[in-house]
Image 1 (tube, rainbow, N blue to C red):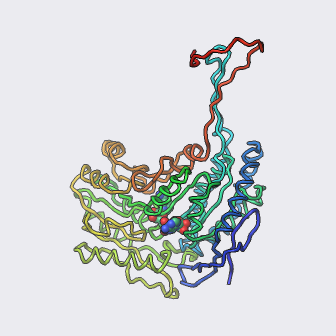
Image 2: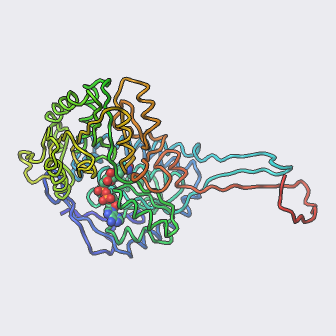
Image 3: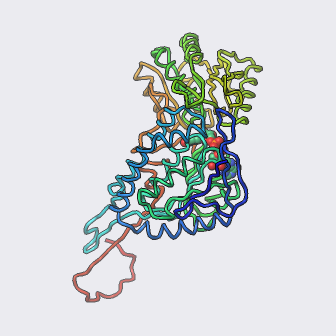
Length: 497
Ligand code: NAD
């Protein structure tokens, strides 16, 4: 049995914790490794190593920092196949999709390579006679990142390159379901020349997470995961004086107008609902069909859903893999059944899917449910599976009201050929990331990623310019260098110009 260790102070280590957790391959249901869980002594050792490393790394020149990041970028790019294989083995998503998430992570590393430009301060000459004012930003110190199962590489790369480029030490607590890719990232950082202790990986349970949230030497927490946990992280960590960005769950709606190209919309809806088995925080899980579009749209989505090839993600022609766990499968099936019992129409039913040769895997097939009402659990819950619910509305205004009444506000999309409808939509929805004829509007790395309402707690979005701001603190210096040292006498008034 493979044992997965921690990565502390530049070395793989078992730590002193005695607990373990099994790691599964969701396509086969087999246990593939035992993950070691840290105890509080391991946590203290990791934080101490990070604190020590942060002091010197934060002081190192920008030229040397970026040299490490450029090298890291090359190493990640040359290990895409290896990383993707680890993702597919523990998450289940198809290999091409795994490579796609690594590609989005690479974009963030590339953005972080430009850190000298991003950290440039401001300078105002002669604000008062003989006085100049300037500003720069310094690292916050020790940052912890707590990440979800659904993007084992991309989400850690939303955080670590930004935190490290800005001069911090970073501790990653990956999801226990997908720990291996994080360990390879640690090795690649080390091979890129990153000093020991600047990037560490600590696996653990809630006690370790609580330890990170309350530890006096941890300065900031980046969290991505479900909404209840995001809210808890914000509350505990801010109560302990840390800055926090905590990204939560989602229920992303796409409005399909009658004037949309319905074939194009159906292609995108199917891909955005069933890609990665619907386990993306930007997945479209609610299709809001407007007026006359509904019947034809549902027909077209049905055809595509029936066409999705659900297989082990390692199969070359697989479109979709399994869901992450038996519990997840059970929850998805239960929620779909509740919708059916409440009177919704089953268009495509993936509840009983069996994948030959993989009978022990955690499978749910693409599922489409029409005539879903807002009071049904299938509308209210983040199902996080390959389930598309269709809600029918009369017009765009009703669709916008529906979106704005939903507690989540991560992503949304509109499919239309009308610029006026698109513009009204982009200005009216209370959602952080909006697609216009684009189903998964994940911002490129030089913008920042973040939802509104129950999809993000704290005020800073992740990566991009807001990431730089989150991982640094500003200093403003007011300076005078008098030509003569001759004292001019004390003045007891408040200084003014
Ligand atoms: P999760 O909330 O169960 O776990 C996320 C992390 O928090 C893991 O590292 C886990 O170990 C830890 N955790 C879990 N329960 C905890 C608790 N009670 N106290 C402290 N820590 C705890 O999420 P998940 O199931 O791994 O991931 C899926 C969720 O993540 C979905 O809700 C999805 O929408 C969300 N997500 C959001 C974004 C975004 O950008 N907003 C991106 C990816 C995933």
